Image (cartoon, rainbow, N blue to C red; front, side, top):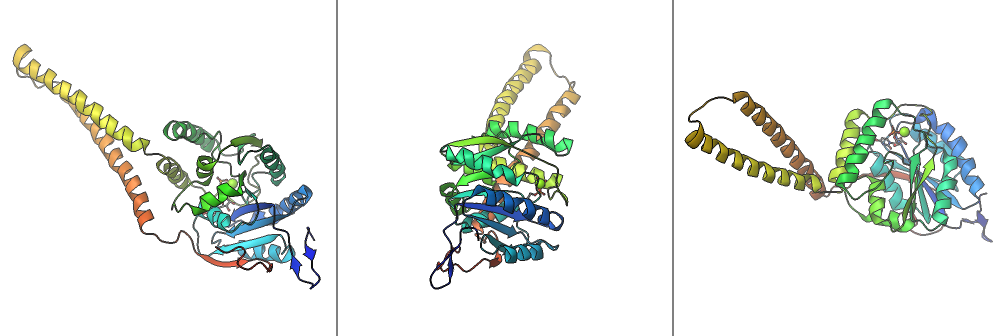
Length: 334
Ligand code: UDP
Ligand code: MG
Protein backbone atom coordinates (compact mmCIF):
# COMPACT_ATOMS: atom_id res chain seq x y z
CA UNK A 1 0.00 0.00 0.00
CA UNK A 2 1.28 3.41 -0.95
CA UNK A 3 4.77 2.41 -1.83
CA UNK A 4 5.40 0.20 1.19
CA UNK A 5 8.06 -2.42 0.62
CA UNK A 6 7.70 -5.79 2.25
CA UNK A 7 11.19 -7.14 2.92
CA UNK A 8 12.19 -10.78 2.98
CA UNK A 9 11.76 -10.90 6.73
CA UNK A 10 8.19 -9.79 6.24
CA UNK A 11 8.66 -6.51 8.05
CA UNK A 12 7.40 -3.40 6.42
CA UNK A 13 9.97 -0.76 5.66
CA UNK A 14 8.91 2.35 3.90
CA UNK A 15 10.88 4.78 1.84
CA UNK A 16 11.19 8.05 3.72
CA UNK A 17 8.27 10.23 2.73
CA UNK A 18 8.91 13.02 0.26
CA UNK A 19 5.98 15.11 1.45
CA UNK A 20 4.86 15.70 5.03
CA UNK A 21 1.49 17.33 5.52
CA UNK A 22 1.16 18.94 8.95
CA UNK A 23 -2.36 19.59 10.24
CA UNK A 24 -3.23 21.14 13.60
CA UNK A 25 -6.56 19.95 14.97
CA UNK A 26 -8.55 21.57 17.72
CA UNK A 27 -12.17 20.60 18.25
CA UNK A 28 -12.82 19.72 14.62
CA UNK A 29 -14.99 16.62 15.06
CA UNK A 30 -17.64 17.81 12.60
CA UNK A 31 -15.23 18.41 9.77
CA UNK A 32 -12.55 15.75 10.12
CA UNK A 33 -14.24 13.02 8.11
CA UNK A 34 -14.74 15.36 5.17
CA UNK A 35 -11.08 16.31 5.45
CA UNK A 36 -9.92 12.68 5.36
CA UNK A 37 -12.20 12.00 2.39
CA UNK A 38 -10.61 14.74 0.32
CA UNK A 39 -7.06 14.90 1.62
CA UNK A 40 -5.96 11.28 1.19
CA UNK A 41 -7.20 10.88 -2.41
CA UNK A 42 -5.55 14.21 -3.30
CA UNK A 43 -2.26 13.01 -1.84
CA UNK A 44 -2.54 9.56 -3.41
CA UNK A 45 -2.92 11.26 -6.78
CA UNK A 46 0.43 13.01 -6.37
CA UNK A 47 2.16 9.68 -6.74
CA UNK A 48 4.80 10.55 -4.13
CA UNK A 49 5.59 8.95 -0.81
CA UNK A 50 3.84 11.06 1.79
CA UNK A 51 2.87 11.20 5.42
CA UNK A 52 0.09 13.11 7.12
CA UNK A 53 0.97 14.35 10.56
CA UNK A 54 -1.98 15.44 12.69
CA UNK A 55 -1.44 17.31 15.91
CA UNK A 56 -4.34 17.10 18.29
CA UNK A 57 -4.07 20.38 20.17
CA UNK A 58 -5.94 19.25 23.28
CA UNK A 59 -9.33 18.92 21.58
CA UNK A 60 -12.16 18.46 24.03
CA UNK A 61 -14.49 16.78 21.53
CA UNK A 62 -14.21 13.51 19.62
CA UNK A 63 -11.42 14.75 17.34
CA UNK A 64 -8.80 12.66 19.15
CA UNK A 65 -10.78 9.47 18.66
CA UNK A 66 -11.48 10.27 15.01
CA UNK A 67 -7.78 10.79 14.40
CA UNK A 68 -7.00 7.45 16.01
CA UNK A 69 -9.57 5.75 13.79
CA UNK A 70 -8.03 7.35 10.74
CA UNK A 71 -4.58 6.26 11.88
CA UNK A 72 -5.84 2.71 12.13
CA UNK A 73 -7.25 2.95 8.63
CA UNK A 74 -4.10 4.30 7.00
CA UNK A 75 -1.30 3.54 9.48
CA UNK A 76 1.46 3.60 6.89
CA UNK A 77 0.93 7.22 5.96
CA UNK A 78 -0.66 8.68 9.09
CA UNK A 79 0.86 9.88 12.33
CA UNK A 80 -0.88 11.62 15.19
CA UNK A 81 0.73 13.69 17.93
CA UNK A 82 -1.40 14.24 21.00
CA UNK A 83 -0.81 17.33 23.13
CA UNK A 84 -1.87 17.17 26.74
CA UNK A 85 -3.59 20.54 26.48
CA UNK A 86 -4.34 23.40 24.13
CA UNK A 87 -1.18 25.24 23.11
CA UNK A 88 -2.47 27.01 20.04
CA UNK A 89 -2.26 26.47 16.31
CA UNK A 90 1.32 27.62 15.90
CA UNK A 91 2.70 25.48 18.70
CA UNK A 92 0.88 22.52 17.17
CA UNK A 93 2.56 23.19 13.84
CA UNK A 94 5.87 23.61 15.66
CA UNK A 95 5.50 20.14 17.17
CA UNK A 96 4.67 18.81 13.74
CA UNK A 97 7.80 20.45 12.32
CA UNK A 98 9.97 18.81 14.98
CA UNK A 99 8.67 15.43 13.93
CA UNK A 100 8.40 15.51 10.16
CA UNK A 101 10.25 13.03 8.01
CA UNK A 102 9.56 14.42 4.56
CA UNK A 103 11.76 16.71 2.48
CA UNK A 104 8.93 19.07 1.69
CA UNK A 105 6.45 20.10 4.30
CA UNK A 106 2.96 21.40 3.67
CA UNK A 107 0.82 22.97 6.39
CA UNK A 108 -2.94 22.84 6.09
CA UNK A 109 -5.86 23.74 8.35
CA UNK A 110 -8.21 20.97 9.39
CA UNK A 111 -11.34 22.90 8.53
CA UNK A 112 -11.15 22.45 4.73
CA UNK A 113 -11.13 26.20 4.15
CA UNK A 114 -8.27 25.56 1.77
CA UNK A 115 -8.75 22.76 -0.75
CA UNK A 116 -6.24 19.91 -0.22
CA UNK A 117 -6.17 19.55 -4.00
CA UNK A 118 -4.16 22.79 -4.13
CA UNK A 119 -1.21 21.07 -2.47
CA UNK A 120 -0.17 20.06 -5.99
CA UNK A 121 0.04 23.76 -6.94
CA UNK A 122 2.36 24.48 -4.02
CA UNK A 123 4.59 21.55 -4.87
CA UNK A 124 4.77 22.67 -8.50
CA UNK A 125 6.12 26.02 -7.30
CA UNK A 126 8.72 24.18 -5.20
CA UNK A 127 9.78 22.24 -8.27
CA UNK A 128 10.77 25.58 -9.75
CA UNK A 129 13.32 26.03 -7.00
CA UNK A 130 11.41 27.97 -4.37
CA UNK A 131 12.13 26.95 -0.80
CA UNK A 132 9.05 28.58 0.66
CA UNK A 133 5.70 28.87 -1.03
CA UNK A 134 3.16 31.16 0.57
CA UNK A 135 -0.42 31.44 -0.54
CA UNK A 136 -2.99 34.03 -1.38
CA UNK A 137 -6.67 33.23 -1.04
CA UNK A 138 -8.33 33.52 -4.41
CA UNK A 139 -11.62 34.73 -3.04
CA UNK A 140 -11.70 34.94 0.66
CA UNK A 141 -14.77 33.61 2.45
CA UNK A 142 -14.68 35.09 5.89
CA UNK A 143 -16.79 37.57 7.77
CA UNK A 144 -16.42 41.11 6.45
CA UNK A 145 -14.77 42.63 9.52
CA UNK A 146 -12.00 40.06 9.36
CA UNK A 147 -11.21 40.95 5.78
CA UNK A 148 -10.95 44.67 6.55
CA UNK A 149 -9.04 44.13 9.76
CA UNK A 150 -6.50 41.87 8.14
CA UNK A 151 -5.99 44.20 5.19
CA UNK A 152 -5.21 47.04 7.60
CA UNK A 153 -2.94 44.83 9.68
CA UNK A 154 -1.13 43.65 6.59
CA UNK A 155 -0.27 47.19 5.64
CA UNK A 156 0.92 48.04 9.15
CA UNK A 157 3.01 44.88 9.37
CA UNK A 158 4.69 45.56 6.05
CA UNK A 159 5.73 48.97 7.31
CA UNK A 160 7.05 47.72 10.64
CA UNK A 161 8.71 44.44 9.74
CA UNK A 162 10.65 43.18 6.76
CA UNK A 163 8.03 40.54 6.11
CA UNK A 164 6.22 40.78 2.79
CA UNK A 165 3.14 38.60 2.70
CA UNK A 166 0.17 39.38 0.55
CA UNK A 167 -2.07 37.25 2.71
CA UNK A 168 -0.87 36.42 6.17
CA UNK A 169 -3.93 34.49 7.23
CA UNK A 170 -3.81 31.52 4.93
CA UNK A 171 -2.03 28.49 6.31
CA UNK A 172 -1.89 26.33 3.20
CA UNK A 173 1.84 26.75 2.61
CA UNK A 174 4.82 24.65 1.60
CA UNK A 175 8.29 24.70 3.12
CA UNK A 176 11.58 23.10 2.29
CA UNK A 177 12.90 20.81 5.01
CA UNK A 178 15.84 23.12 5.75
CA UNK A 179 13.45 25.93 6.64
CA UNK A 180 11.30 23.68 8.75
CA UNK A 181 14.35 22.49 10.68
CA UNK A 182 15.41 26.08 11.26
CA UNK A 183 11.92 26.92 12.53
CA UNK A 184 11.86 23.88 14.78
CA UNK A 185 15.19 24.95 16.25
CA UNK A 186 14.12 28.49 17.05
CA UNK A 187 12.98 28.45 20.61
CA UNK A 188 10.63 31.39 20.46
CA UNK A 189 7.60 31.06 22.67
CA UNK A 190 4.88 32.82 20.77
CA UNK A 191 5.57 33.10 17.12
CA UNK A 192 3.95 33.18 13.75
CA UNK A 193 5.24 30.38 11.59
CA UNK A 194 4.77 31.75 8.05
CA UNK A 195 6.60 34.93 9.08
CA UNK A 196 9.45 32.95 10.60
CA UNK A 197 9.65 30.87 7.45
CA UNK A 198 9.78 33.99 5.33
CA UNK A 199 12.73 35.17 7.44
CA UNK A 200 14.65 31.98 6.74
CA UNK A 201 13.69 31.55 3.10
CA UNK A 202 16.21 32.20 0.36
CA UNK A 203 13.77 32.14 -2.52
CA UNK A 204 10.19 32.65 -1.35
CA UNK A 205 7.20 32.94 -3.60
CA UNK A 206 3.41 33.01 -3.38
CA UNK A 207 0.73 31.18 -5.29
CA UNK A 208 -3.01 31.64 -5.40
CA UNK A 209 -5.10 28.97 -3.72
CA UNK A 210 -8.80 28.42 -3.25
CA UNK A 211 -10.63 29.40 -0.11
CA UNK A 212 -14.01 28.22 1.05
CA UNK A 213 -16.18 28.70 4.01
CA UNK A 214 -15.51 26.46 6.94
CA UNK A 215 -16.93 23.01 6.14
CA UNK A 216 -18.13 22.51 9.71
CA UNK A 217 -17.54 23.73 13.24
CA UNK A 218 -16.60 27.29 14.04
CA UNK A 219 -13.54 29.49 13.89
CA UNK A 220 -11.23 29.17 16.88
CA UNK A 221 -10.14 32.77 16.53
CA UNK A 222 -12.09 35.34 18.47
CA UNK A 223 -11.40 39.05 18.03
CA UNK A 224 -9.19 38.90 21.11
CA UNK A 225 -7.07 36.04 19.79
CA UNK A 226 -6.70 37.82 16.46
CA UNK A 227 -5.48 40.97 18.19
CA UNK A 228 -3.01 38.89 20.22
CA UNK A 229 -1.80 37.15 17.10
CA UNK A 230 -1.13 40.45 15.37
CA UNK A 231 0.70 41.87 18.35
CA UNK A 232 2.90 38.76 18.31
CA UNK A 233 3.43 39.17 14.62
CA UNK A 234 4.69 42.72 15.02
CA UNK A 235 6.55 42.51 18.33
CA UNK A 236 7.98 39.11 17.48
CA UNK A 237 9.64 40.35 14.34
CA UNK A 238 10.45 43.99 14.88
CA UNK A 239 11.51 46.44 17.55
CA UNK A 240 10.45 49.34 15.34
CA UNK A 241 7.40 50.12 17.54
CA UNK A 242 9.70 50.69 20.52
CA UNK A 243 12.07 52.76 18.44
CA UNK A 244 9.18 54.80 17.03
CA UNK A 245 8.21 55.45 20.58
CA UNK A 246 11.53 56.92 21.52
CA UNK A 247 11.52 58.96 18.32
CA UNK A 248 8.07 60.23 19.19
CA UNK A 249 9.19 61.04 22.73
CA UNK A 250 12.16 62.91 21.32
CA UNK A 251 10.06 64.91 18.88
CA UNK A 252 7.57 65.71 21.60
CA UNK A 253 10.25 66.83 24.00
CA UNK A 254 11.73 69.11 21.35
CA UNK A 255 8.33 70.58 20.52
CA UNK A 256 7.39 71.17 24.13
CA UNK A 257 10.77 72.81 24.65
CA UNK A 258 9.90 75.26 21.88
CA UNK A 259 6.44 75.72 23.35
CA UNK A 260 7.90 76.62 26.73
CA UNK A 261 10.22 79.16 25.14
CA UNK A 262 7.26 80.63 23.28
CA UNK A 263 5.19 80.88 26.49
CA UNK A 264 8.07 82.51 28.32
CA UNK A 265 8.47 85.07 25.56
CA UNK A 266 4.72 85.79 25.67
CA UNK A 267 4.78 86.09 29.45
CA UNK A 268 7.70 88.45 29.77
CA UNK A 269 8.00 90.32 26.49
CA UNK A 270 4.71 90.36 24.62
CA UNK A 271 1.47 89.90 26.56
CA UNK A 272 2.11 89.58 30.29
CA UNK A 273 0.31 87.15 32.68
CA UNK A 274 -2.62 85.22 31.13
CA UNK A 275 -4.71 82.12 31.91
CA UNK A 276 -6.40 81.30 28.69
CA UNK A 277 -6.13 78.31 26.40
CA UNK A 278 -6.92 75.99 29.31
CA UNK A 279 -8.85 73.53 27.14
CA UNK A 280 -6.12 73.38 24.56
CA UNK A 281 -3.81 72.49 27.38
CA UNK A 282 -6.21 69.77 28.56
CA UNK A 283 -6.43 68.35 25.07
CA UNK A 284 -2.68 68.21 24.81
CA UNK A 285 -2.41 66.61 28.25
CA UNK A 286 -4.97 63.92 27.52
CA UNK A 287 -3.30 63.14 24.25
CA UNK A 288 0.00 62.79 26.02
CA UNK A 289 -1.49 60.60 28.75
CA UNK A 290 -2.96 58.38 26.05
CA UNK A 291 0.40 58.10 24.32
CA UNK A 292 2.08 57.35 27.65
CA UNK A 293 -0.34 54.55 28.45
CA UNK A 294 0.11 53.10 24.99
CA UNK A 295 3.86 53.31 25.42
CA UNK A 296 3.73 51.49 28.73
CA UNK A 297 1.51 48.83 27.19
CA UNK A 298 3.92 48.45 24.32
CA UNK A 299 6.83 48.05 26.69
CA UNK A 300 4.70 45.45 28.46
CA UNK A 301 4.33 43.50 25.21
CA UNK A 302 8.06 43.21 24.84
CA UNK A 303 8.73 42.61 28.53
CA UNK A 304 6.03 39.92 28.47
CA UNK A 305 7.75 38.20 25.58
CA UNK A 306 11.07 38.36 27.38
CA UNK A 307 9.44 36.98 30.52
CA UNK A 308 7.87 34.06 28.68
CA UNK A 309 11.16 33.37 27.02
CA UNK A 310 13.36 33.40 30.12
CA UNK A 311 11.12 30.99 31.99
CA UNK A 312 12.39 28.35 29.60
CA UNK A 313 9.31 26.22 30.02
CA UNK A 314 8.61 23.63 27.39
CA UNK A 315 6.40 25.24 24.77
CA UNK A 316 4.09 22.26 24.60
CA UNK A 317 3.82 18.81 26.09
CA UNK A 318 3.37 15.78 23.92
CA UNK A 319 1.24 13.14 25.55
CA UNK A 320 1.50 10.42 22.93
CA UNK A 321 2.48 9.84 19.33
CA UNK A 322 0.61 7.36 17.18
CA UNK A 323 2.76 6.05 14.38
CA UNK A 324 3.57 2.81 12.67
CA UNK A 325 6.75 1.22 13.91
CA UNK A 326 9.15 1.50 11.02
CA UNK A 327 12.41 -0.12 12.10
CA UNK A 328 14.32 3.09 12.04
CA UNK A 329 15.58 3.63 15.54
CA UNK A 330 14.80 7.04 16.88
CA UNK A 331 12.89 8.09 13.79
CA UNK A 332 10.39 10.76 14.54
CA UNK A 333 11.74 11.63 17.95
CA UNK A 334 14.11 14.42 18.70
N1 UDP B 1 -6.25 25.28 15.84
C1 UDP B 1 -5.44 24.63 16.76
N2 UDP B 1 -5.36 25.13 18.03
C2 UDP B 1 -6.03 26.26 18.41
C3 UDP B 1 -6.82 26.92 17.45
C4 UDP B 1 -6.91 26.41 16.17
O1 UDP B 1 -4.81 23.62 16.46
O2 UDP B 1 -5.91 26.65 19.57
C5 UDP B 1 -6.37 24.71 14.46
C6 UDP B 1 -7.77 24.48 13.98
O3 UDP B 1 -8.23 23.18 14.32
C7 UDP B 1 -7.62 24.64 12.49
C8 UDP B 1 -6.53 25.69 12.37
O4 UDP B 1 -5.84 25.68 13.60
O5 UDP B 1 -7.15 23.45 11.88
C9 UDP B 1 -7.08 27.06 12.04
O6 UDP B 1 -8.07 27.43 12.96
P1 UDP B 1 -9.39 28.19 12.49
O7 UDP B 1 -9.92 27.56 11.24
O8 UDP B 1 -10.33 28.24 13.65
O9 UDP B 1 -8.83 29.64 12.18
P2 UDP B 1 -9.42 30.65 11.07
O10 UDP B 1 -9.53 29.88 9.79
O11 UDP B 1 -10.74 31.10 11.57
O12 UDP B 1 -8.39 31.73 11.02
MG1 MG C 1 -10.18 28.21 9.33
